Amino acid sequence: MKPSRRLPCLLALTAALLAGCQSGSGPGAPLDTTKYTIESTDKFVPVGEEVAAAITCTGLQERILPDGRLEVVANVKNRSAQPLRVLISCVFKDEQAAAIGGEAPPRILDLARNTTEAVTFDSANNLARRYTIQVRARP
Image (cartoon, rainbow, N blue to C red; front, side, top):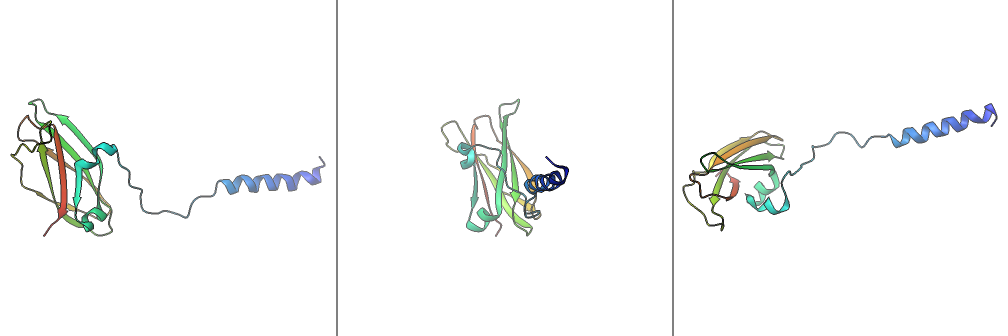
């Protein structure tokens, strides 16, 4: 190939490579990820359309404490651009999904805009093996 033809070919190849490296439309809102499986999504229940649109759970961790009680940690995310104050509670259940009682009253959770907060719940006794976390608007 003649030297006079190499330059246009080299420029065309460089332009094609650089076009493949072009980035997207710029920064946007962070993507929500869920670190729990589809079978555990029923463990986190946002109550009401407004809460369901703004609040999500990005992770659930559970473990049995040394005394046999169940501990649950929920990572609760406010996806809205406004700070939110919600009520959050956890109903502990036995192996057959029957409520075991002894639940603490709902807690007030203040979430700044676009933030995630870890909330921990401990069962009152060692019968708990399942649970449901509910989040609702504060009246």
